Length: 292
Image (cartoon, rainbow, N blue to C red; front, side, top):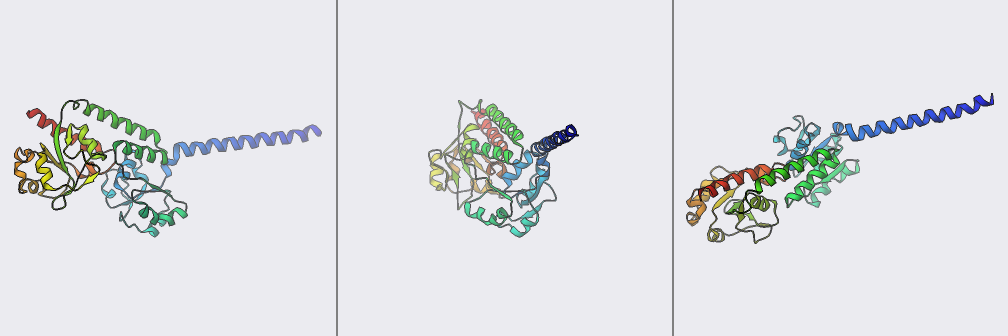
């Protein structure tokens, strides 16, 4: 009888151990392999949405901003919100796991109610360099259990950039890039990812000695006499308007009909699709170089 009594606890301990072990293995399996299939994501910035789609998480997006609605690969059933002023109560009803933002701290503060309800609020700050775009991809990949896929996206982009830039190391074309049309002309100098793209594509920004986003006067552009003018202002007739500006007829880019449109989304959203803007710029620059 005593022997039987001693065997029961040992058997129970063994069963308990196996139960806990099996449970732990099962939980790890869910968190590492399957949780991305269950994540409910709201993305309120198109650049973040594009990255999510690139990580095969488009169907996980249950809510998005109005600009993300047109991103190819997004869940067609996603509820659409105003990008700058989403309805927090409606967001709560969606019961999201993650809300991805891109904005100033004052904007992020609007989502405190969601945060208090257990929703993870992730703010991706606007990238000012290509490396920061990579950082955003990796961070989103980490938070959505897609880090391996994010690493592959970054590696693919680096390989494409290396292929493009290796042919442009000894050649350059002067470029003016307009991101807001007259009378409120805006462009950019150094320490912007668009300036990096220009350099990698074989261009030299006429405002590379300035820093960040700038509002140049027309005289400074005319005096710099760029060989190419790029614009990502998506307005009908914008290129013709640039060519018709008084005094601009003396700029080489205008005289030689080298005013080109660069896709606005590709060149303004810090996502993996910036590579398409690089391809566009590089193709136009090569045309000029081949003419020499």
